Image 1: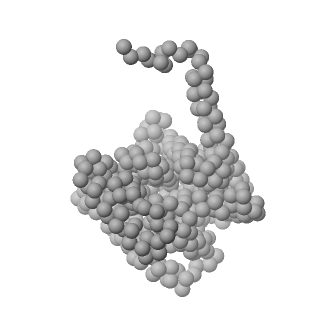
Image 2: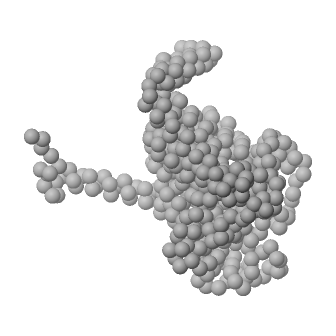
Image 3: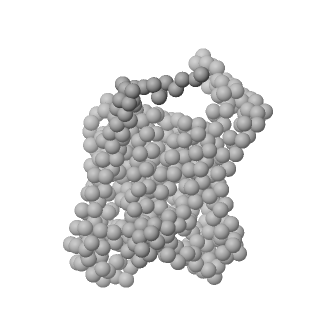
Length: 445
């Protein structure tokens, strides 16, 4: 007869006490190194936003684009209205009234905005009573809960790869990144980041179905989510190849020989893996990533009769279409936009970030595991391929491997000036950009 050893343990046995101790210690580590620093930056952003609302916004010349200070300085509404700018109106509109008819596809319609975030707002907003304030509060709640989840997954992922100190620095840099206030705004950035990091996290742990599910939810949040298929598929390929045709020691081989041996191993491993049904079944999990986009396209077909409604609206109504990234960069350099806060393109910020993050691609391929390098490459290049430089600062907020690289560059064994430089630069810029955002200056949209 089998004996359950757990039942034989006393109610407060040393084993159970050790389990509780380990859980408490792990939770406190995550709290102190990840969640608490992040929440601290959110409090600072609230203070900056309130100051901008009460002391700067009333002094500005009235402009139809800018928010009304009479509405935004009312308390307590100011606590949530300051996070509701620019595209927030589209997401709240979808949550309350749904997508617009097919006749709007040739205008700046809401079909370019993906449905998961407004769907969650709609559900929570109805639970809160269904008023306009209820939907605003729902959007804030979803964004900030998702941001905490993203921070937690980021910390756990980086701690697994590089250790506790690098993980805590990475989370701090995310919290202070100049445009990270969007993680707390009524925008899908935090939701997309949470699903993206979770997707990479589960791929690194070889939980393929969870990785695919998170990737599919990311795709249902933002179109960039479909690019998660590239790093996850790579990781899956490498895991299968290492299992069936592991690489030999190549320390004594030349570079060309290493390349040939690597390619032979990867192809042979893939062929051997293809002989087993279980590998085909687990590989199906990767199809969950594009399924989010497919679901939205099917919905668009039902509602508008156009299976490609979101892509057509992006092109017809918003003027975005795929092109080579270097064409946009060359054009932007030749046609600079300087000192125009009412322009939707923050040229100085966007052009600097574009070249800095192109550098991060090279750095990631040299310093990080390939899955992170591929994620960096696709997430950096896609916005540059959309024929517009607008909002690059917001889009690059989700390129978390860049923050890992900065954390490695400014680790505890490096000169402390590196860390202080990053913190002071990020914090100062974020405070200024938060003021721009609260004032409704399109330059930071």
